[in-house]
Length: 258
Image 1 (cartoon, rainbow, N blue to C red):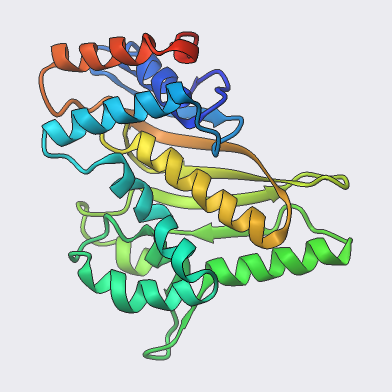
Image 2 (image 1 turned 120 degrees about the horizontal axis):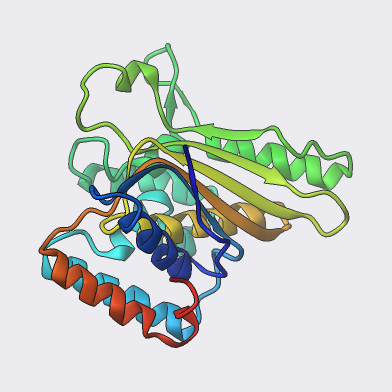
């Protein structure tokens, strides 16, 4: 059982298409194995920005995390722009992470850069190691294209309590062949809230791809998300959600997304 969403040009149009499809998939407004594909996850037209603003306003009205906050859980772009790599890894650990309340949500980037080893106080930085490996491979001209992965799920930390587990489980990066290589990313979600999280997740993953691609000196390609369970969560009544989707559909170039 799966629900493919037609490839969309941007994160905002992909959000609208996916929400529309899942919302009508069943009486419970959820679906299994939803596949969302974004051709260019870094592009943002005026229409895209308008939809992001609409979703942000809706979330804030019902006291939910804004889109930018959700995006920052995956890649803290402003921190990177101020400090660059590799310095921003340590700044995140020492300055940002202590301000994030305990729990799994909001700490995805921490899991990408801090994998604890058995020896107390020691850890790996999976993201940095992956970038270094990919950069060396691309520079050598003898490039392995399918060996770059980061696991977010940790069986030691996550196999216990049923609640408060991370929803993002796995990241698989790929490189296309040929002289003009592009970076592809497939992200797998255990569970996915399409109103509160999907748009911010798409934007954050696009920013993560941009970071990796720039560090490796390749172009950004497509982003694919597999939501093994997706739900159109509704922080208010469904009438207000319908109004939000109608407003989003009315924005110029996004009319075809739904």
